[in-house]
Amino acid sequence: MIRLENVNKVYRTKTIETTALSNINLFVPKGEFLSIMGPSGCGKSTLLNIIGLLDEATSGTIRIDGNIHSNYNSKAVARFRNAKLGFIFQSFHLIPDLSVIDNVELPLLYRKTSRKERRRLAEEALESVGLKNRMSHFPSQLSGGQKQRVAISRAIIGKPAILLADEPTGNLDSVMGNEVMDILLRLNTEGETTIVMVTHDQNMAQKTHKLMRLYDGSQVA
Image (cartoon, rainbow, N blue to C red; front, side):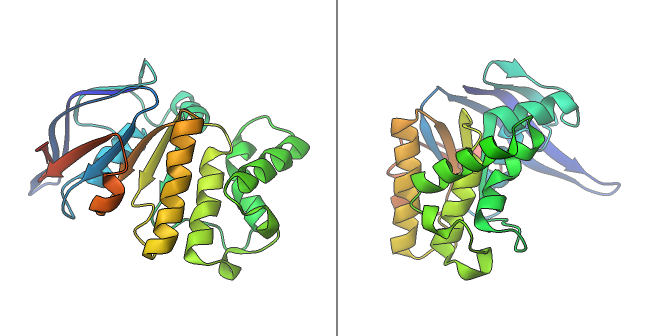
């Protein structure tokens, strides 16, 4: 489902060159749940953005669901991201002026999906995370754990093959964090969704199938 071969990412300015990722090789088969761990600034989020086709590698080959993409700004890549990938962020990224259900519907606005079908799928996604009774609420009326469950609903409404999660439990207490992790594990097990999760939490990482460690942009395990 995900294959990276000799991937490097270098940021350059007129005076300095910074290597964010060095010679990354990664294979994630369909249905696997992978955790990526490492200290702050080691390249975890950069790697996740490259897998998610949000950032372009300086060199190397990236295959996502069998496809190699070269121009990340193309409409074809944008359509691929929308159809195949779901994103969950530590800070939720919910739009405060939109209701819960309108936030969840957002990814389907970029598809030719009728309003009735968008609403049905949004209700289904919210029900799957136990928040159907909060559809009309606004983000400011929710707890951190509830906001993250809304974000998960938004990520899965399009039924993506791959879910990319950047510190999904990082802003939550242990109880809410475990609830969110249980949802991700269920999506992985029942929906056979391939998941790549960046985390600082060893306890969360131990619940996944495989662990990759980064240090200063390089794989160490």
